[in-house]
Length: 115
Image (tube, rainbow, N blue to C red; front, top):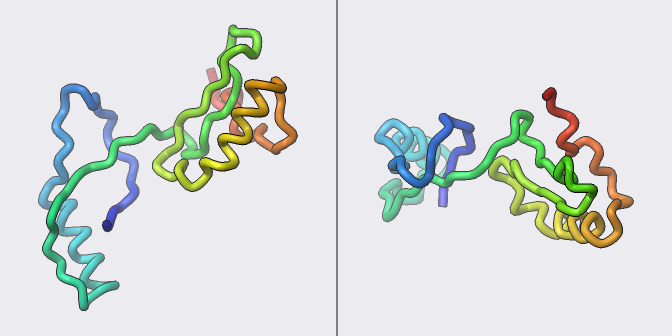
């Protein structure tokens, strides 16, 4: 797998085609040949990866406003959230069960964004 992370246009995943274009494939091919010249630059399959991005590319982990700490949300993982699954799970469990966490998550709050 080779990929390039770069936030792009907002798309509707239910109605829009998301095949990589020729320019994107050439960028990836050039990178592959530069760093792995012994590997074939032919591709077998291509696919764009759709994911949510927050404005600052940090996650959003917080209580949903207006629900008295009864709904916890986690979103906006900006393409790199999978690396943090264990700690995100711990945080969400703390918030759901205890209504707080000892982990430093203030910088991930929804309140960091202007209304």
